[in-house]
Image 1: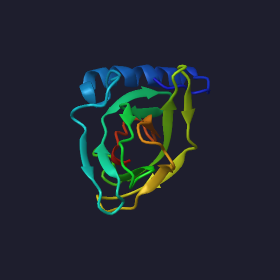
Image 2: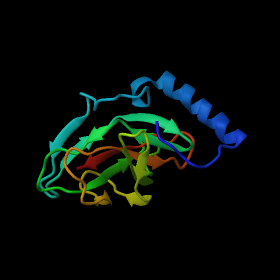
Image 3: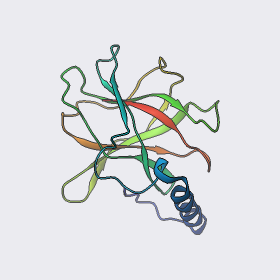
Image 4: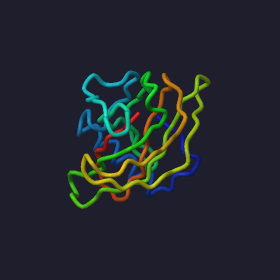
Amino acid sequence: MFKDARRLSRQTLLITVGLAVLATVMGPTVGAAAAEPSASAKTHSSKKTGCDVVKPRLDGYEAGRVSTELLTVPSNPNCTTIAVRNIKDPGNPGDHCATFLIQFPQSDGEAIYTDPVTACSRGPHGPVTILATNVPDGTDYRVIYDIDYLIQGLKFWILH
């Protein structure tokens, strides 16, 4: 799914396996990898930012990080960034923050990652946090977030 240079401790490995089993039971919310963006991802345009808004499906878990399905930056001259907004954990209504980064898969099988960014945003009109700038149209990427607690299951919007 994505690479993490840290070595896994036995406890982390057990948690990872446990979450993988949980993901299998939960189904498509955090399930098998999809090579194409989901038809169920909802897209609309944000008049305020000029960017398209996507509500992504979560697609994988590894070493304390959750990744979205593979997304592609649309052709949109009004938006050259990838950002997040409207962060929430339905299981913990007070949680509106997370640390995000972006993975840009490369044709050689490696990946490039942005630096982690902490973002907090409540509601659809909350602040937008930019994760990457000057991103060319047609670029494939995944948004990744660090989990803060074992059962955290964030939902968020991506603006690109």
